[in-house]
Length: 399
Image 1 (cartoon, rainbow, N blue to C red):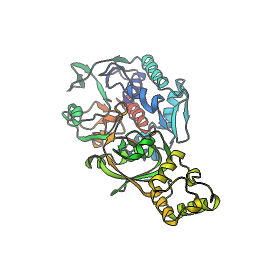
Image 2 (cartoon, rainbow, N blue to C red):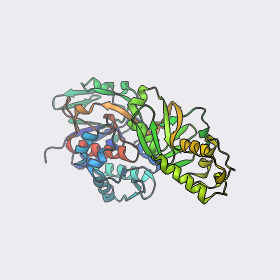
Image 3 (spheres, one colour):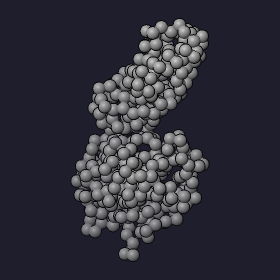
Image 4 (cartoon, one colour):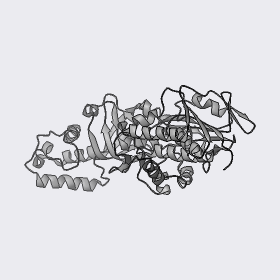
C-alpha cells in the first residue's frame, strides 16, 4: 500500500470513532480529537441506556426512506455499508445484536456500555490516539494537507455531530461550505394545561397522529408524558416536519386517531358489536379496542360518557361523540421538549457540498465529513446511528 497518512478525526461520537477505527485499521496514523472529557456520550444514553445500534432493514433502498433529509445520498452510501455490514462488524468483535418486534436492534446485553467497550477496544487495537478536552477551533488548508490548530495532517474527517445553532458550524462555513440552518428534530409535543398529561406513562399502542393544516401524518405507539405527547409516532412526525414546525414556532394543532382505524364505519360497527355483546356491562369495564384501561376511562370522560353507564343505555348521539373522540381528538401544541443528550438536528453542511461516494468535501479537497454534522437525519429507531456507522466507515476508508 502507499505510505501511511496522518489522519485527524474531529469528534468522538459514533461517526468519529467509526471513521477513526476504519482509517487506522487501514494502516494509517489517526488522531481523534474530542472537545469534552468523554467520548461516545450519545451512545451511552441512547435507547434508554441500551443503545439502539441500527434497524433491521437490509435493503439500502428501503432503509434510505427513513431519512427525511438525505434519502437520495444515503441510498448510494448504503450500497457500500449498510445494516448487514454493521451487524457483521460488531459480531466479528464479539457483540451480538438482537432484533425487537418493531425492528430496532440492540446488543443482547441491553447495555450501551457493551457498544462503547467494543468501539474503544477496536480503537486501541487499531492504534487510534484519542485526545480529550481538545476542541478544534480552526482548520487551515496547506499544500497536500491541513493544519488542525497548528498541527499538520494529510487528511481530516469532521464528525462533530449536530449543532443547535448555525454559529457552531461557522468554522466550516468559512472554508466555503454552505449550511442549512439547524433546527431540532425528534422532539415531543408540549400540551400546556391539557388534562391528558395526568396520564403520564400511558402508552397507546397504535395511533394515527397528524398535524392539522399539513400533510404530515404518522402511525405508531404514542406515549403520554408529563409535558404532552411523545413515543415513536410523535417523534417520527417531528422529524418529517422538523423545519415546517420550526417555522410555525412550535404552535399548531395535533389531531390524534387513538385506535389507528381510518374507517369510521368500522369503528361504529365495533361499538355496535360491543353494545350487543356486552349490553348489561358498564361501558368503562368493557373496552372493545386495544387501549389501556386508564386511557379508555379518559376517552369516555372526554366524550362526556359516564363509565358506569351500560352499553345498552348508550344513546346514538353519545356513540357518535365517542367515535369522534376516538378518531379526531385534537390538542393545541405550544412548544416542544428535546433531550439534550440525544439531540438530533435537521440541518448542517449542505449535502450538495459532499461527495457521498467518498464523503469528501467538494469544496475543500482532503476534508471529509461523517454523521450529523451533515444535513442528514433519520427518524427514531436506530436510523441515525446507522447513518453514523455508514458515513464514518466510508470517510475513514477513503480518507
